[in-house]
Amino acid sequence: MSFLVNLGLGLLFGVGLVISGMADPAKVLNFLDLFGTWDPSLAFVMGGAVVVAFAGYRLVLARGEPIVGGSFHLPTRNDIDARVIAGPAIFGIGWGLGGFCPGPALTALGLGASGTLAFVPAMIIGMWTARLIGEAVSRTSNV
Image (cartoon, rainbow, N blue to C red):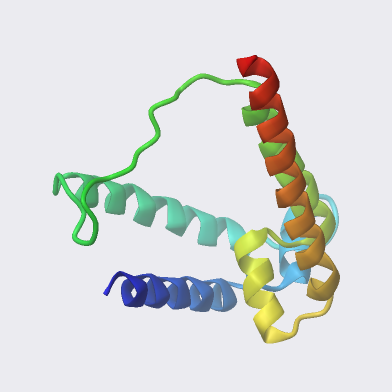
């Protein structure tokens, strides 16, 4: 049952990315081009997502336990370290250069969008490299 729920939610997310234009790198790059061909429409997409997520988290967490699964897995750390600064910075640079972030890139790959055949493998290599670096740093700090 959990697989079907996750599949349905993933498909809903992918359809939302396509409808909102997030799977179109040109639209994303136009949103980021403040002094050129700026397209503010994605700000409304993000604003809507923030409102829905805010309300959704409040409703779901009020239940006490998830419908599927034993308990909620919420982050417990609240400190800011180098990973919290470097990760989003690298993410933003990649988003600005390629016009994709991971979810829309995978969605656009399924749509056959141009550029995804280069972006998705580079993204996977970057994620893999970040994991290796994180594990190496953890090993050296625990010694």
